[in-house]
Structure formats: structure tokens, C-alpha cells
Length: 206
Length: 320
Image (cartoon, rainbow over all chains, first blue to last red; front, side, top):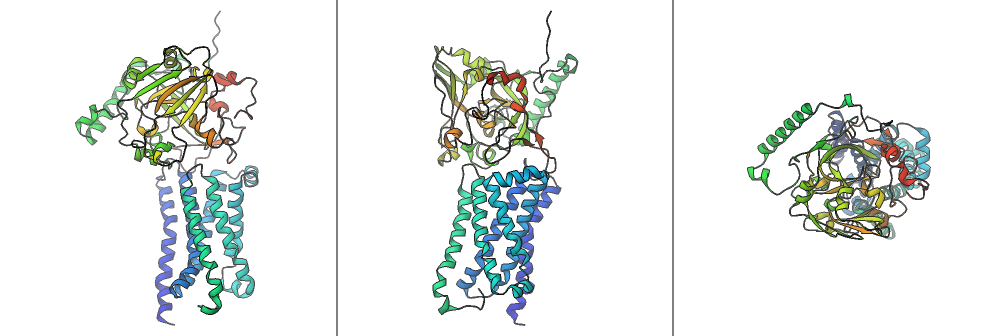
């Protein structure tokens, strides 16, 4: 085992794991102490939604980062970051289903069908699901070339996630626009190197 | 024979708190407020020109909403939609902390025989102030129970003698980006504008509000003078009013100008007419915690007996 490998496995990854759980810990702590503001449900909905998008963007940043820096560690974090995005998306959805909609299935189905921001949000979660399920090394091997085809869904998920946020806010679009801008930059960063890729070739699978 | 039908908010004589007990409670509260303030602020702040937090003198109690449990003062004054001070729910409380409300005059003109101006001190001393506990329902499907202090709007309007062409009343919020930092960005088409039909404005439930919980309004709640129309969504209840105008035509209003498909002129609370982006059938009560569940939305926010007649024959789906 190379020393860099050990540093990633025993230093970087546990640190990212702990940091990724921090927002969840803070929300849970706030919920226990009843200290989530005047509208705690809104705090939890917004908090879990924000972190879903942030981890999704971080996940998408890993490939360009590896190319820019020419180091291996960003790719080693990609799966964990993606799973964190899925984790917060599940919390977001569960909070909505259980605490906001109180499991009134008729209303839930109506809302998903009728309100575009919920439709795209739910669709984004549905697309995250197969990506999370196929994130293991075994599934990667089994799916072969189809694995990367399937995981290109993450670009659609990113767009849907930002739309979900933008269609929700009333007038002040600043925050969703920032997420949208970062997403656009990260997608653009993938676009250009494509032509160069044959010449540069930094790694076997990107 | 006089047959008296009790209204939904009325209570039996026996339910009313003994006045002696009420006065005593109020004195205790005021003393506590003064002590609390005195400990935290320099002495001049207590007598300074700033509104917000100072107890309102001579407040009369009423039976309105005595069966409702008021939301905490802390929640009412920290969770606000007031884009003039920022778009986040907590931004108004932060950015309105030093909002100066003196001097403050309201210009009243348009279709009336006695147009003119009135200062906030005249409003505070010239109209007997009373406390009414009302439901407050935001279009965003949350609600609060608020003990407002103020007086019926009809009394203020009558002073300016609206004429027979006055069919609507238009209101405007202060426009002053120096004092209202949210106005430096064009999130809304400033100044904020709202309006009521004349019969809605003259309705006894419609209040000019100067305080909350017996104290002058804090900036984030619309100091020093705001409207409260309890059967309508909160955005109708315009804050920090500087201008009132009687008009013949229906006035333009801020939110329905920006998103006509989402916000109407009437904006009556109605569980059966959804906002395009969310259901209005139920609402979350602020201050009840994460796991409390929602309450069913009441028609006209629970004031159906009092106001339904205003809209007789109107299609409330069309005129939302």
C-alpha cells in the first residue's frame, strides 16, 4: 500500500465522513433541544434540501478537480459525497412525507402530480435511487460500461435539483441562481476537456 | 324582545377575566417589560424616540380571540415576511433593529372631502387603542395567533370623510432604502402597495395596528402602523404605512402585480382554493414544534360568520 493510499483511507475519508454527518447532527441536536427556530419544520426541510444540493455539487466537482490537480484523491471521495447527497435527499423526502404531509397518500400523490417543483424534486430523488444502489464496487464491475452510462443521470439530477429550488422560492432567486451557476460551471468544466481527453489521459476510468 | 346570537368569538359574561385581575396582570407585565428593558439598555433608550417594545398606554381589553392561545412574543417578532428588511424569515428582525419611526406621518387623500396628514403621535393618542387576539394566516400555509393592539381602520378613515366615489382604499409602505435596506434590491416593485374594497376597509374586524402584546410594534412587524385584515392572507396586511388613498378604481397591489396567477386582489383565506404551488387545506401553527402536525385551514380564517356576507354571490375561485 502506498503512503498516499493510507492517508486517503485513514485520514481524508473519515474526516469527510465526519464533516458530512455534521449538518445532520446539528439538525438532530436542534430538534432534540427544540431549538430550530419558530418554524422548525421549515428549518429541517430547507437544511436537508440545501445539503442535498451542496453534496451533489461537491460530487460533481470531484472529476474536474482531479483533472485540474492531477491527483487521485478527489475520485476516492466521489462515492461518499454522492451517498451523502442521497442521504440528505432521503431525509428531505421523509421529512416532507411524514412531518409535512403526515403520510396522507392522496395529498402526496396529488402534490407530486400537480405542483411542478415537487414533480421535479421527486423525480430527482427517484433518479438518485438507482445511483445509490449501484454505487458499490461489485455493481460497478457487474454493470461495466453501462455503469458510467447510468451514472450520467447525475447531470439530470443536478438540473432537476436546482429547478426544484428555483420554482419553490417566491421572488428572491439569488440562492437558487448561485447553485445553478455552480452547476453550470461544473458541467462546462466537463465539456471542454472532452476533446483533449485522448491526448491527456489522466486515468483509466473517468 | 331582543334575541342576541353570540358570534363565534364572543364569550359568556362569566368567562371574562375580572377587570381588576386583568389590570393587575397588565401592570405586572409592564413592570417586568420595563425592568427587562432597563437592565439591557441605557436609560435614554427607555424614553427615546424609538418605537417597538415600549408599552402602549391605556390599552382596552376585548373579548376577541380569548379562546385562542397566543403564539409567543419571541416567535411573532423573529419569524417575519417583510422584504423591505430582507427576504429571509429572520432578516427583518436583524435589519429592523434600529428602524427609526419618529417622526412619522401618514398622508390620506384621494376621493375624500378632508384630505390631510396625521402624525403617529396623534394616531396613538387620538384613537382609543384596544387589544384583540386574531388568527394570522400567511399565504405560505403557516399561521400564528397574535394579540394585536390598535383600533378599527374605519375610525381613521372616517376622519378624512371619504366621498361617494371612494370604492376602494389603497395603502403604501414607506420607501426609503436608507432605512429599509431590503429596498436597495428590486426584489419587489417598491413601494409595497396594498388595497381593500371600501366595505372591507370599513368592516369592524379590520384593524389599524400600533402594537403587539401591549407594546409598540417592533420594526420587523411593521412599525409604527400596519394594517390587519384577519380573514385575508398576511400579505394584504401592509406594514409601515405612510400613505392611504381613496380610489374609484381597484388599486394595483404589489404581489398580484408580480404574479397575477398566484396572488389575487382579494386573497381571502380559503381552504378550498389552493395556491398554485401548495395546498391551502391545512396550515402549520408557528411555535408548536417539529412534530405537532397541521391544523385544518378555516374558511375566511375562522371569521366566516362575520365576513362571508361581503362576498355573497362572488365566485371565490375566480376572485381569489
